[in-house]
Image 1 (cartoon, rainbow, N blue to C red):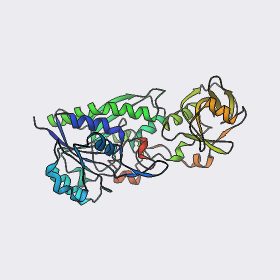
Image 2 (spheres, rainbow, N blue to C red):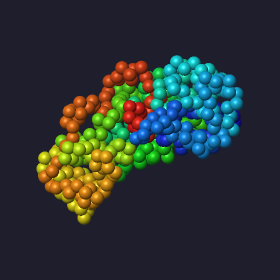
Image 3 (cartoon, helix red, strand yellow):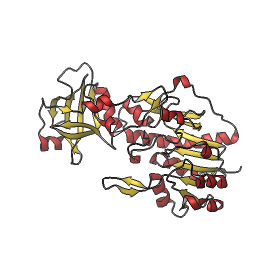
Length: 383
């Protein structure tokens, strides 16, 4: 059987196990990898390669070759299972050298996982099967942030799907899907890891099924479609007037990359997992009020609009993460003091999920799917 020739589009760490599996699977030949260019990251804002690029240069230094997009067309004949060409174009839309390169490589399939740029028809039509991996139960949670949104909404299960891309956002026919359980202890990182472990076999079965003709795309029901938006730093602010369960879900969704945000004594503090919610029958103080400081148990209990939350890890502004025991020793929080969040920011936040397509969604962003926290704000998540 002839090998299926693949060009992989991806930037986020969530897709690395799948890329590794494709490279080492004798059914497939990964001819090229397209990833985003180096971008500023960290406190020092130093230029860093994408997780995918770092994986290729660190682990496959003898196989992966970084080439300039403008000259890649002339190297297309050299792409093979023994030499993977790696391109980092600054943009994709209207990039004619990239289009010519893809035409010269002539892949059977494009595979897109957490790439982070728009792919138009001029890219998608360069392969028979433009396959995208999306981390939600399509048509639910289309768009930029399905992983983090599932945590924010308290979902107990979600899915990972493969589908054939179209110019519209995440609306192509679904090829295969698998259920992903979400445990109460899952946070953004652990849920992304769960997806990354499930994607390789799902993708392999999808590509093999397409090649053999054993699977075909199933249309999505547009009446059930919902859309997530890009998550921003403003979404990390805790709304203490919400329920204890919602506060815990927010903490889960922003662990460990950002932390859930509030203020204490006028200065910002962050929380991360673990956190526990007390049931709605609990009655106590005003939202955000510290009800109990239990240094022996290592937790602070704070009231919400319904129930209470127990906090175990906290990061004061300009300080490292501390256990509550360390925080108590250094700051001596007292019952009756309050955690207070920015009410204006919370009130201005748009809904997490909508049914009507936005103007951007109508144009279509098929490449902007679940990624990782390392991709930064203003891009697809993570979620």
